[in-house]
Length: 151
Image (cartoon, rainbow, N blue to C red; front, side, top):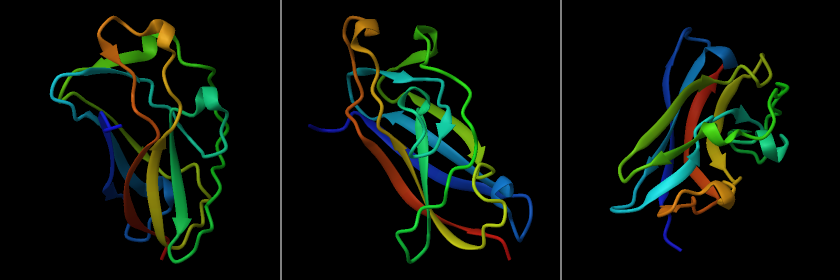
């Protein structure tokens, strides 16, 4: 099945030359890439880790040390249950939803190049789907970027 959404991540800046995770600024962008279908998405866009509970795993980042398959642990606790019906958004063709975030939920002493990928793998409940609106085709995996942390 052809994807109906695109997930993109980019580094948008840093507040220091030797940036810690909280100083590495990222933007995650979700775009409806269809010509005619509206898609229901979780508009809360709560950031979490790979092993966060499904009801709080809106978008999760896979952060790896470059040249390895070793994931960096997500350290933040997530406050929040399942999204409410009001937190879902309809993305019309060409519509965009984005968040700006950082890596403060990863170990504060990260050093070296890190590979970062955003993921969405939890769907929307079909019982709240408006007539004529599609569900996301999942999983969504963004492009991979390299960010430099530490010295």
